[in-house]
Image 1 (tube, helix red, strand yellow):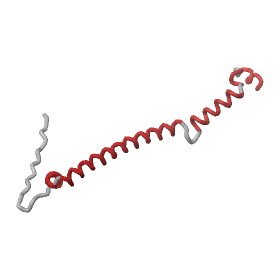
Image 2 (spheres, rainbow, N blue to C red):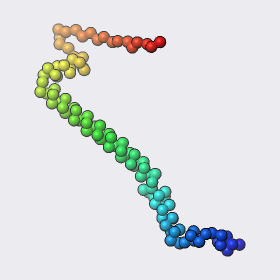
Image 3 (cartoon, rainbow, N blue to C red):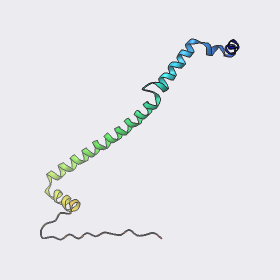
Image 4 (tube, rainbow, N blue to C red):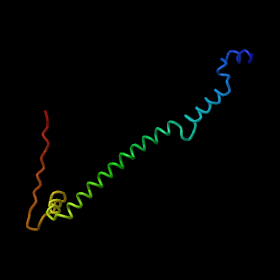
Length: 105
């Protein structure tokens, strides 16, 4: 009974080298610690981290340019304080005008 079943299997699938190679591929592609799925996830995470690194590098560069501009010019420092932090001199009053968005009908 088993002999009939074994005789029906093509000879290429009986090749021990092919079977060993296929087992190795399955092991490496799906069962290993560094399989394809984990490699894809790690590659995706690495690309995200690279984008984040580039963002922070650009942000640090623009901040250093702004810092050098602010430390070099007292008028720029005063302008930043007035616009961003709502600072004022003792003799001044600040009026904030808030515009309401127009509703589209």
